[in-house]
Length: 216
Image 1 (cartoon, rainbow, N blue to C red):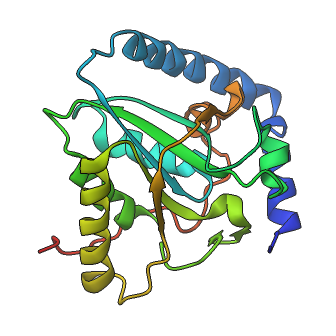
Image 2 (cartoon, one colour; image 1 turned 120 degrees about the horizontal axis):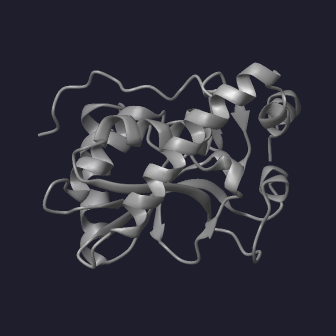
């Protein structure tokens, strides 16, 4: 499989490159954000649902969902690993491509405020689902595009939205995999809320919201 050594090394080292002043600022803002996220996660009701997607570097995916759905029914968004066959994978192991995992984001949401369909439509707007095992300069199976459904209704919606997006937005080029959500592994703590804690951190060039018309 492909593997971009320079991009991957930059990403592996990026949490440690900040200056002292940046670290102090990031520490304060990150601590506040982490406290808010923890408080939110602690108050998640039993009626909440989960959506799990992979769209390349999970830092940007989590950040885009938080920015777009904050205050609109998003309870939490965590980054982690799914789709592989190794227990408790580390970030370095996943970046090697050897574990079979994808970098992914698991969104916990209020289905009364956000629909699963909205989350999947947003997924197809905020990354490039046409590049196999690649997002921007990041190459490798860990950067693949995927939807990991949690029940039959989610599978139905994921396949319907994928077919519509493929026809109306992406000209028949979507390569996103649609699979049942199996074992989820949280990523290491420093990956959570990464771009809040490190506002100058690495952002994949493919992670931005496209101005597509509504799906029909």
